[in-house]
Length: 396
Image (cartoon, rainbow, N blue to C red; front, top):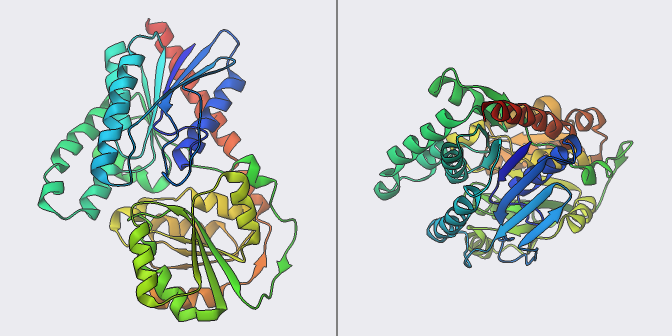
């Protein structure tokens, strides 16, 4: 069994895609015999300029060989991210087509890694397992209104169709995505393996309810600070309204970091702190220091289908969750997580009312954690991938 894994992010990089792909490879490594091989083609750590992390260009760990492609320096802008991806895609394609594989797995949030995977699968005439972490075309149509950007939507739609029709299996990380693909591409083989909770977070699950009555509530958000999160549209207003009752701690970076700084300055807030991204061990400490964990998605219709990976991390901590989400994410949180307060995105008044509904205790969510352990979810995905690889072996 020879498996090719394509992922723009991989450990030790910080991103949902990195954590997911790393967990999948670990699951494959546990399940495959010693004579098997797993080739991972990814990038050198590049998720955040503010988080410097080094990794070997070539790394071998048992049956796993990791090739990391260095990228030019880039920020979170669309153009320079596109240039960085092209460097990755060209190098990854040339590297991949020199190998002999039975199956290719590609995980993608912005469509282009999916395109890369489909091109490699076509060239090598092997099955493609496509893992879709976001509906890029849907998001682009919703977020960008300029004629220049909207002009490329038909091209993106054709690329999406090429990827989906090339794939033998299409997995989506949110059940909210299923209807989109079922309606648009009837007859495709769809599965849904969500994100999950890593072992490092499971060790922190509280065993009982622990009441907290601090004089100032520490509200923590950790993750990307981009247009998708819309923190600049909600955090400064909430911080001003709640005043000395709360202290916001925002940990991360992204394309809307400067707008967040400017909005905080405009509101005259002194109770918001912004810190650079941190490695996961420190992140656990920040979660434990928090009284409330904050989550927010911007007010776009496309995000009504999304289930943020952050939900799973937050759930494991047992902390109260204050979430500005809608659609599937809102339903999932309200149905599955105790001690949460959901409000509509960008709704300051609704957010303030939701805050008052929170019970400021740490609560065990043991049943949820057991249901969504990452290693169990990835073992199932790995099993499907191995089965597809066996099918590819028989064809060759």
